[in-house]
Amino acid sequence: MGNLKLFNSNGLTNTHPINPGGKYKFYFGNVTCFKAVHSSSFADGSYEALAAGFGFETTDGNFYYSGDTAFYTEMKLV
Image (cartoon, rainbow, N blue to C red; front, side, top):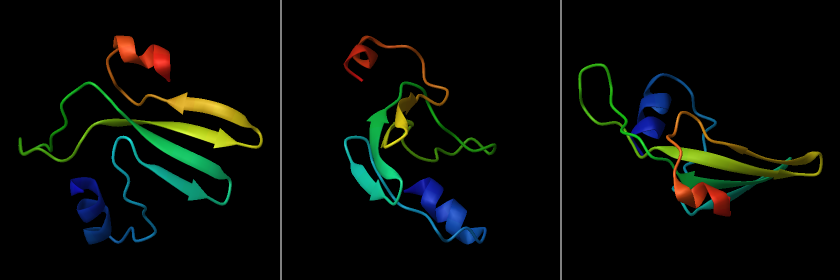
């Protein structure tokens, strides 16, 4: 939730909180959140939030956005 708080405090209000294992239905299709493997912190060294990747299911096609995660065996399941 750290990123959501950061985004909202900087004026970005059209956000949708989602944690690994969760899914959100948007107008263009479904987005599923998957765990990612890396740490996440702000410039001051404090931790910000869970690392995550996202699977998109749309009428135009499906894809997985891994962000900057490290490779791990479970990615085969995605």
